[in-house]
Image 1: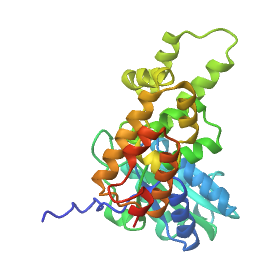
Image 2: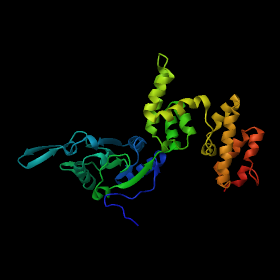
Image 3: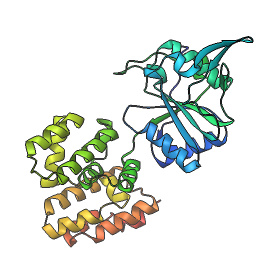
Image 4: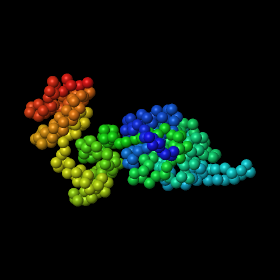
Length: 331
C-alpha cells in the first residue's frame, strides 16, 4: 500500500460545519489541544470558530498568514544594554482567554511557518508569551486540486489535532434561519439535497444579500440584472435554476420528508393544486424507501406516516408498505 508523503496528513473523519463542529472546538479548547480545521473555502470555518468562542465566553483573534510577514507576528527588534528584544504587535493577546486563529497556514510563505511552530510548541514568540487561557488553532484548504498551497512541514502539522470539515445542508439551514437569510435562498437550499457538492455556503449568503438589496431597492430591478448578480456567485446554470425555482417549484427530496421538513410546502401545493410536484415527491420517496428495504428509524417512520397522512387517498396508497403501514417497518 502506498504510504503518504512525509508532509501530508492522512484523511480523518469529517465533521459537519455547525453544531457538530462547535462541540469539537469546545472540547478541544477545554483540553488545551491545538487543532487545525481543514476544508474547502466558503464553508464557514472562520465563522464557526468565532461562534464557538462566543459560546465559550472567550475572545477570538484571527491572523491571515497569507498577507503577513514574520515581523507581523514576531514584532520589531529593539536593543538595550542587555541585548536585542522584540516588541510584539499590539494585536497579539495580552490577557484573558480565547482562540488565536492562524488562517491560510498552507497558503502563506514557508518562512511564516517557523514562528507558527514556536507559537505552537512553546506558546511564545521571542519575548512574547501567549497567555495561558489562549489556544493557538489554524484553518487551511485541502492541498492539491484547485488550491495553490504549500505542503506543511510534518513537525508543524504534528502539533495539531487535524479535523476535516465539510458543509451540511441541514446544519447550514439551521444557521440560515437563525440569521434571517432570505427566504428564497432558504427554500432553494432546502430543496437541493446535494447543493454544497458543487457550490459553497458563502456564495448563497451573498445571494441572500443580493435578494435583500433587490427587495429594498426603491427602483424596480430587472430579472436580467438579478440573474447577472446571482450568476456571479453560483454560476449561470445554478442561477437560472434558482431564479426559476419560485416559478416552477421543485419536488421534495426524500431526506426532507424523512426529517420532517415538508409541512409548509405541502400546504402551499395542496392549496395551489400542484399535484405534479406532490406526485413527483411521492415517487422519489417510494423509490428511496424501497431501495432501503423500508428500513427506517422510528423518527423517519413517524415523519413518513405524517407525510402520508397529508396526501390525497390515491397518492397516500402509493406509500403503503407491502406488509403493513410505514411505521410497522421501522427498526
